[in-house]
Amino acid sequence: MIWKMKVNIFLGHKLIIFISLILLGSSLSFGETIKLELSEKKFGVSQVPVELVFPQNPIKKPFPLIILQHGSSRDAGFVSNGIVQTDVQMRNLSKAALNNGFAVAIIDAFYQKKLKANQKTKFPDAQVYAKQVASYFSKKPELDPNNFFYTGFSYGGHAALMLMDDLKFGDNKKWAGIVSLEPPCNIFHEQRDFITPILVLKGGESHYEPKPCKTMIDLYVSKGTDAELIIFPNSNHFFSHNGKIVKGVAFNGCGDNPVLIGMSKNLRFLDGSQANPKIVRKKCFTKTGGSGKSREDLKLAIDSSIKFFKSKLN
Image (cartoon, rainbow, N blue to C red; front, side):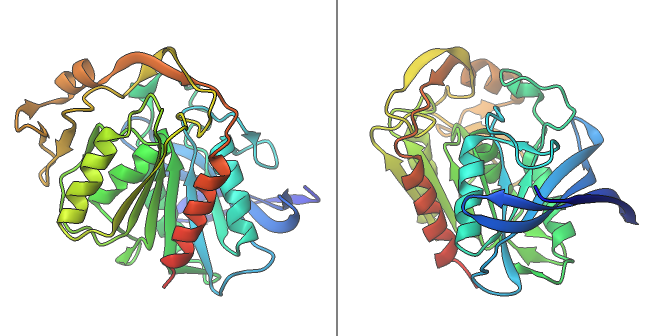
C-alpha cells in the first residue's frame, strides 16, 4: 500500500472509505476499502467491509466487476490495509481477475463477528450481502452493472448457489454469471430456467463430494439453464492432491438424496420426502473435514473461472 485516506460520507448507507494503491500480483492497482452497513437476518445491520480494486489495463470500460466471497477460513489474511480478510482461493482469483482486466470487490462477511470456521450454522447469509453490495456498486458510473459477476469458495460457493433464487439486483439488473468453487451441493434451489449462467468447480476427492453437484447441474440443464460442472479428479476441497479426511464439521451429508428448495421456500428431499431445517441439520451435517493445501489444481480452477467470466461478458 502506498497511501490511504479516510473519509465519511452518507448515501443511504453509512460508509467509511479507505482509498489506497494496492499491490496485487505483478501490477499496481488503485482501490478503496468501503465499510457498508448491510442488513442480514442473523446479524441484523452490521458493518461489512469491501475491497474494491480496479485493474491497470481494463478489458473494457465501464469496468466489469467480479464480487468475491471467502470461505469459512480467511487463511490469506488481510488484503491490503488491515481491514478486509479473505482466503487463498479468492485472493488468487482476484489477482487473476485484475490481470485480465476485471475490477474486483472482495467482501469480508465475517468482519468483527468473532466467527470460527466450525460454527457453520452461525454464518451470515453471504448472498444477501452480495446483492446489497452489487446494488450499491451498480450506481458507480465507472462500473458496468450489466457485467457484474459473483463467485465464492466453499461457504462462499454455497452463497453463490443460494443466489440463484433471486438473480436481480439494483435497478432490475441481472448477474452476468456465477462461479461456485467447491460448494456443498447438498441443498440447492429447485430446477428452473435460471436467467444467469453458472459454473461449478469441484474436486473429485473432496469431502464435499461432487455427486450432488452433478445431480443439480443435470437438473438445471434439463430446464434450459446455461450450467456447467468441472471436476478435477485428483483434487480435494482445496484443489490439492495431498488431501485427507479429518475430524471437523461439514454440510456434506445427503449426497445421494440432496435437499431442494422450492419456489415457495419449502424444503423437500430429491426423493420427494419432506424436509425442514431440523431434519436437514440432523441428516446433512457430518463430523468430517478436509485437510491438505498443496493446491496443485487451484490455478486450473482459477483459469477456468476467468475463461468463464470472459465468455459471459455482455
